[in-house]
Length: 292
Image 1 (cartoon, rainbow, N blue to C red):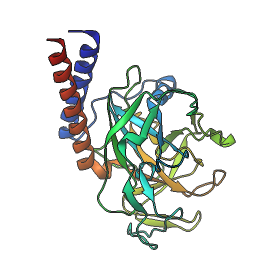
Image 2: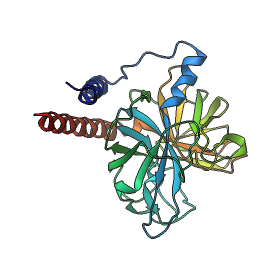
Image 3: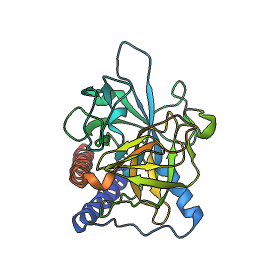
Image 4: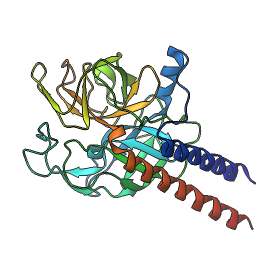
């Protein structure tokens, strides 16, 4: 077996173990043993660049988490064309201003970049999307989550565990990570923010901050910035991804930073992991056939 086939086979085995963990309702990953181990998990946060119009040079830069060798978890608004820049939601997860999404972006227009600093004008993407999976409907409220299946495994990038067995609680602490450049908002530079307290879990309205949360959403205190969208909230106790950055107030605001809970979409996660597994299986078969 050549090295490339062996790497794909190893990735295939990892996804198989992840699927077994999903079936049992837990993640097959040990919690981080130290602060440095938690921070090392930031390496699994990648940049997701999407071109929504082939006739325009503009590209949307978001963040995402590698959750299997060829699978990215991100926000749906990063990979679907928007019909509004100001979605309005209520505590039931319903929209107040109509649909928020049109069609999905062409998967081939979604590129994945790796590293601590990304420059799309000079850097080469490490992978491209071949399929996007997300909740049905065209509303961002309570459903701003998507999985992106890649055309190849991201070698040398650590996959992050996803917690699907239990929700977050008010008072928990998470580490937000993304390519929003921190407080300087240097888009394209990966930064983790200060450990952020979960202020509220939906369904609720937080009068103190103005956040309105659906049943599948939660709010954090520390600001996240443009470019952080789609990035993970990592539980500081376990190192697991528990949420995806959806929307919020300004980059400098305290509170009103809304995440979609990933445990609320366990069925979607199962389908995504199985799809990525099938892609790897096909790649293995194709590689072995070419070698004959």
